[in-house]
Length: 227
Ligand SMILES: [Zn+2]
Figure 1 (spheres, helix red, strand yellow):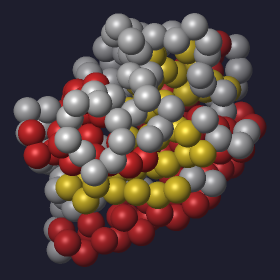
Figure 2 (tube, protein in one colour):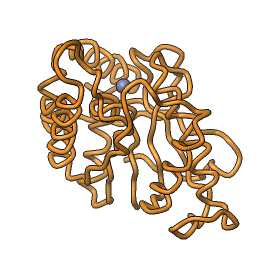
Figure 3 (cartoon, protein in one colour):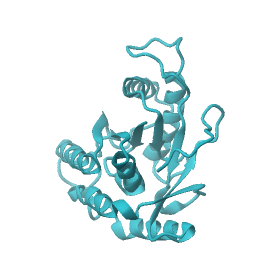
Figure 4 (cartoon, protein in one colour):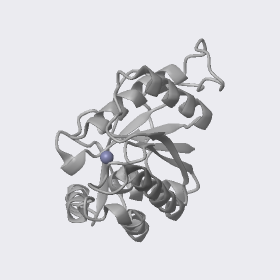
């Protein structure tokens, strides 16, 4: 299976589903970790362009640690909007080129406008990417691919239906997060670790990541896709 993780910013996939992506890779699935924006406004002060370059390098190291391929759409921080037709078309092309079997991304209700914007863009772009009538440099997806939503920030307005035990890859996840050296303070690591503990408590393991599949027509599958 080919799994595409799409996060709004360079560290989102790492904190919300880094363990799960590492587990996919460890079991032999092909994993692509793509951050839509380069995170150029991730920390105050300094040069945004330099920060964007640095954060892209950090994300590349994190993906390498997970055994995943790194990608970015190269967008600017704070500009991701569901209504942006250029972004939607660029994302559609990227998804056609990548041809994943599963996409993991932010839930529609999350705190950051970029997260909400990307979630909706993913839903719309994957729908269009399966349409054979649309003009594209790449062939259409062979089906409407399933989408699985990650945790929201601190789990607010997010009711999971699937949990993944990340115990076996906890060190990998820690390294993936630590690769984001420019963001260690804004990452609020204790906050994310508390969420892992809380989700682990819910399913009877030490630490877990939680998910909810997209329940729209053509996206539902009969078998579990998560590791
Ligand atoms: Zn983010």
